[in-house]
Every structure is written in structure tokens, then in C-alpha cells.
Image 1 (cartoon, helix red, strand yellow):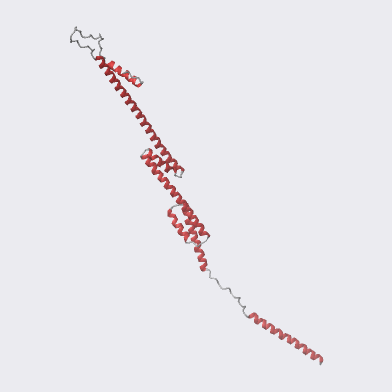
Image 2: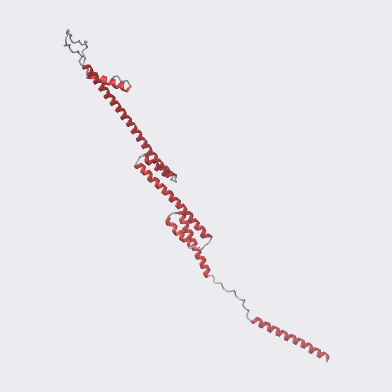
Length: 261
């Protein structure tokens, strides 16, 4: 009897264990059969607008860089405004500041070249006036304007033109001085010849005058006949060749500082 009770009790434990196992398995199966819970998803960030803004800024920067590079390569007024407009459309920042400085550098260089071009133009006008009116009064203005020219090649050409005009003025002045000297010498020789001719004529007239005779005495007392003039050699009339010889001799004496009156 005791053994039967023990067997029954033992069987109850087995049955209880089986029941517990079934319960556990059932619970686990239920749990496994349920869908897994989804993790909380992070809020979505809308990147469309931000990406578009970045792309637009990059495109503006590219255009601005291209416009500034064109201005640097071809420094004319027509390229200044497009470059400034392109850079002005950029957002404030280091890149914009650098492009602005590059534009300012080009503008400063253009202003410098424009001033140099004006100096060269003024010098060209002054030298052209000197060439058209070759007088001493136009030399200094042309020289002063040429000294201000910066470009060495242009300055050298202008200086060469000034030197040519100065040489021409000096040559004409020397020629005029020589002509004046020649005219003065010719006038002096003519005056000497005229003086010699006058002297020769005067001498000829003196030689042709008759000898002096004292008048006869007519008062009381013994008659005194007029005094006889000393016998003189008959004056021979000078020929034309002799007169010319005297003129030449007188002219020679005049030029040598010897006068025979």
C-alpha cells in the first residue's frame, strides 16, 4: 500500500512538471509569434532646400571667379562692371573679400596706366607743336612734357624727335649768323671802295687846278709886273686804269688801317 502511494505521488510530480513545461512553451510561443516592436525612428531632416542653396552659391562663386579672371587678363573698362556685379551677388565671406581685392588691384593698375597714357599724349602734342613751329620758345615745353613720360620706348622716340628739331634750329642759326657776317663784310668793303673812289676823284681835281698868278700893280710908283708863277710841270690827266689803281690802293690802305689823305 505504501509503495502504491509513493508511486502515485511520484507520478503527480511528473505530471506537474509536464504541465509547467507546457505552460512555459505556450507562453514562449505566444511571445515569439508576436511581431517585434519597431525602434523609434529619428525625425527626418529636409535637406532639399539646404542643398539647393549650396549649389546656387557655388555657381555664383564660379561665375564671379570667371569674371574677375577675365578682368585681370583683359584690363579694360568694359570688364570692370561685370566682375563687380558678379562679386556683389556673393555672400559675405573670405572668398568674396579676396575677389573684391583683386578687382581693386586691377582698377588701380588701370588708373595708373591711364595717367601714364595722358602724359604720353601731352608730350606727343608738345613735340608735334615743336616740329611744326621750330622756334626756341617751343623747345622747353616739349622737353618738360617728354621728361614726364614713363614708358622708356615712347620717351626715347620723343627725345630723338626733339633733338632733331634742336639740331635744325641750331643749324639755321649758324647759317643766319654766317650770312650776317658776310653781309657786314661786303658792306664794309663797299664803303671802303666808295671812300677810295672819292679820294681818287678829289686828288684828280686838285691836280687839274691852274697855277696861281698875283694881280698886276696899278697904283702910283714904278710899274711892277705881275709875279710870274713858278714853272710847273704840265699835269698829265689820269687814265681810267690809273684812277682804278688808286682806288684799289686806297681800299687796301683802308682795310689795313692806313689812310693817306
